[in-house]
Length: 200
Image (cartoon, rainbow, N blue to C red):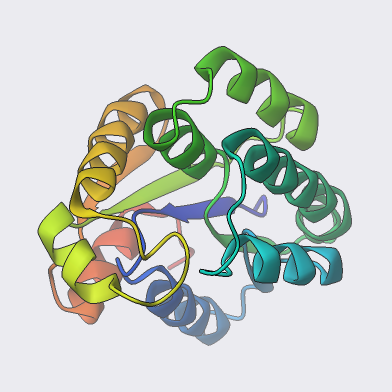
């Protein structure tokens, strides 16, 4: 079967890392070759950019933040995601293009058309096969993330804007699904697995 590119989206503290781990365990149990990765930080350059972007003591302008994210995405797609898919591996990724639209577009007010053009340039048109939005009420996300990093140190209003953006954006994604991230992790994982075309 064709290797799939599966993306987990959602606010900070919605459980994306936990779900990546659980999904990887299920794929391994079925002997499906796979790779788990994340944005930002899926390459060595990405690790450096992640450190800069998430530093709570660094004041970065919205356009600068965006361009760093897009640079990371291009490296990530060309050096990690595309090669893995070409090798027949499933790719499980925490965050991709919807995060840019939700955080930099709706959250920071960067022009959405510019964001879409830059995403297209960075990805070379590579779209996920499945996108799962791990949805979390803004109050829960805010409580879980206070004092963690620059993005997670945002106020409740920012989390509310980002959640509304995600819920709007996911509607236009083919094979995009909203999953209740307040459920126990094992239940969230079962809901994701039920929507993936896994071999028996």
